Length: 189
Image (cartoon, rainbow, N blue to C red; front, side, top):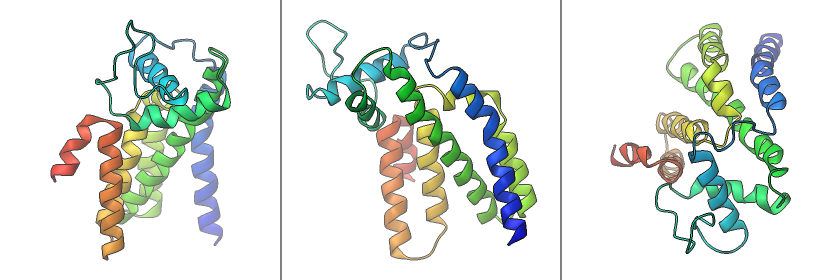
């Protein structure tokens, strides 16, 4: 019991650097620089306002065809809670950063499923969690971490016995595909 508490404390300590980075950059000073985040957020606005999955920042409001809809549908919750842009970017950070914690938890679980000891699994999780790219992607409105959560969930569930686990793995694969088109590889496999 004490060992598990130590591992939980170590896991929570591992989250501090990325949480601090997300907090300091909660207003997303680089928002729109990569274009993808801005397109997804404006598509989320269209969903939240009932206009459908469209790009409201372009003339004639065309349908969004570049990105799958799951992440923008999730971000539509941000627009429901706070429809005032750019003030709602801080709310968006609160919606994106927790996926990093979920991702690291799922990665640690997968490492354990592959037979690694708890210390080794935590060490690999620490290497992943302390990566500057994970902190960056975990605090931006990009699908990398969101998608990775569904991939890791699918891999974890696929290793478990039973039809329920298989069905849940299939659902995770479908969500991965709806988060990023790269998920089609999981659907095929």
